[in-house]
Image (cartoon, rainbow, N blue to C red; front, top):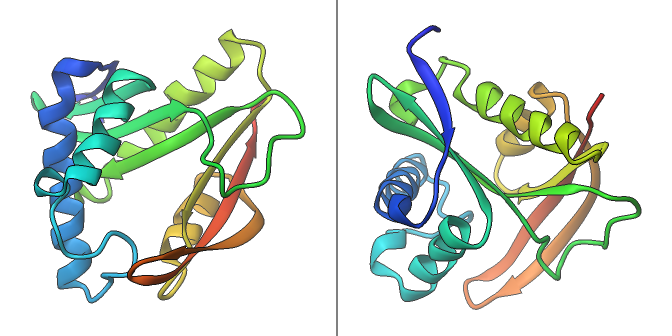
Length: 173
């Protein structure tokens, strides 16, 4: 797809990131998958806004554009405390979200290529991240389709109940 462009983002892109996250929450809730992020939009949840602000200001943020519209985001930053510590130098994927109305355009794949390029430029051989492992495991399968292996599982206790997760790892060559 020639009109899909990925560029780095930053603090000025917080609104676009929140729109993507709000859309993902709506889509997941409509599909009956409220276990990942609940039903409250990120943009109306102080904790969600704080988390997204961190991705936009503290992490390395990549944004995917299709026809001038932001259709995906991927951020690289520090791993959360609930995943096992790294065993070697890595880049950690803190968020990946794609506008579901553009499914099938390889948006995740193109953003992941940018993450791989960043890892190579820093001499790092591993990309790692975590994702929701609930419902039917579709998120884990998505990462597998991008070449990741599921290397660990975990459960985080939240006020809404247990949140099952998986750690995904990709060797960068």
